Length: 225
Image 1 (cartoon, rainbow, N blue to C red):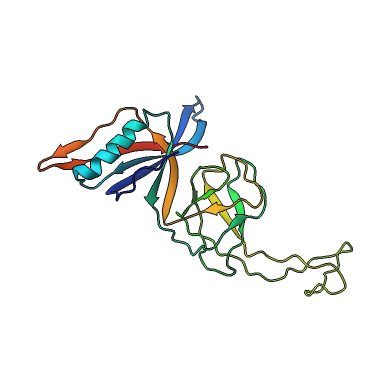
Image 2: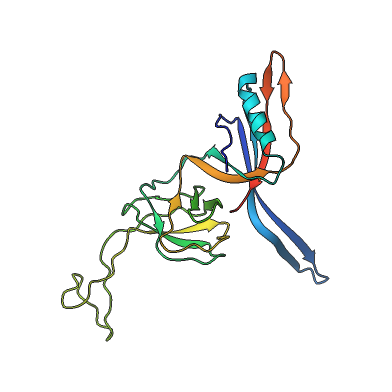
């Protein structure tokens, strides 16, 4: 899987693509049914290019030979949140879940993830958006009751070690997980977010304006692998 040539982008239009049919009954009740999974669709326009900049892009797109080959493209999506380090999931989540706990964060960080941030999970290529801004929890001990219901001491003396918060945050994502995510799965985030995509159409073109100014726009849609 190759990467799309790295250049600046003038316009990036991202839309959520979800096929849905609607039916209104005689009583006026509307029923909606989704068909297939959600994918993000993007229209990407380059700023004016020289011929030397345009020709490698054109050659790359031709090498894809239509819509069947996926590739990666990195788009400027700066993180609004204060996440850092190497976060991982702290428990497994089934496909269809839209809430997941993320571990291995710096403790007590305000707005560690911010609504609108993009993340993905390292076991599959789908991109997800954070729905609600969250803080990371403190790394303090949690008092836990023993089998008789008596609270143990905070230092765990006389019994097992207590549970400890693992500097985690509970995030809500869109869309819900398209694949199960195992415990300990790495989380990817960056100021240049990488999507795995394919061309939306097998045909493509570019414009040339005097004096030799080239213009190029591509339409792609997520390819989940």
